[in-house]
Amino acid sequence: ECPSCGSWSGRVHSGYERQVSDTAVSGQELVLHLRVRRFFCDAADCGKRTFGEQIPGLTFRYGRCTVPLRKVREAVALALGGRAGARLAEHLSAGIGRDALVTASA
Image 1 (tube, rainbow, N blue to C red):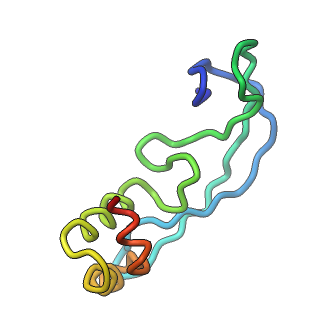
Image 2 (image 1 turned 30 degrees about the vertical axis):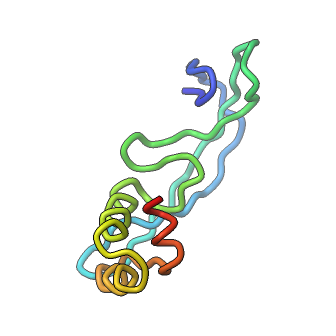
């Protein structure tokens, strides 16, 4: 589905590999390697020519982490913030810097 106009497309433009971080498994950081397709938007009144597919509940536009990991990081940021939150995130194998953690909660 095109993010601008909402029309469905079946014409594949190209594909690429995308890497996104996910929540830890057994204390180990997890990185998913996804094969993503780009589609043409055929709507005449739409400003977008191509768009990348998203997996609902897992990925979001321009995201380098999954939706569940983003929620974990936001919860840590809201509860602890800066340095303390970054230390807890490191123990949860959801590493993020203190400055990025504060920006994530905004």
